[in-house]
Image (cartoon, rainbow, N blue to C red):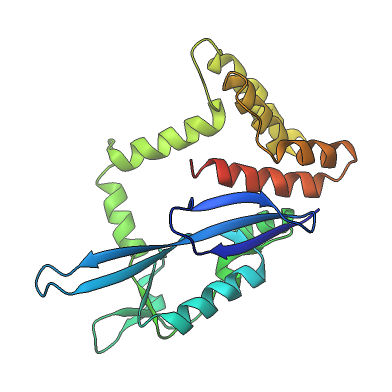
Length: 241
């Protein structure tokens, strides 16, 4: 049982989806969504393609992204928070990477747990057509310090952390009582399985995801690596709803 990461170009598709393949594997597909825009000053039409990406995937997935970007586009804007010394401004005023960056040890350990590669180790964004379009780490620090007593950024962070600890909740499901169970799940070989099951129970018994059965089969035969990979893929797919 394997997980493949592929790009999907199709109008109306979800940004990320999980589906079975004819080879018995499962594919995580990230979409390329085209947006038609009009320049207000000149009235000319522009087309902007948005690449949905994941931070952990196979090396082939990232090679496909880079090949598509360098072959199709005059300029590719990417998001990355890093120190200002990692970039230089060209004559056009655009900020570009001066050297490839590497993933942190924590990112590499997490990727290795799923048999995947961290994006920072596999996707080289130096040179044309890649242009940095994000905050620098110093700018992010300034913005965070201005929200020290609260604000949208901290509220979103607290909401995300609370969702991980409490899980999905519905009236009468006793979300607070489930917190110890969810925390204890991280001591298991495949904590994602228990968290997915808990979310499903809390949803009131909604139709189980198609990947749930192969996840259970993999866990029952002791193939926790495959079960964790599928659970991760299912979690990513659910997050796009």
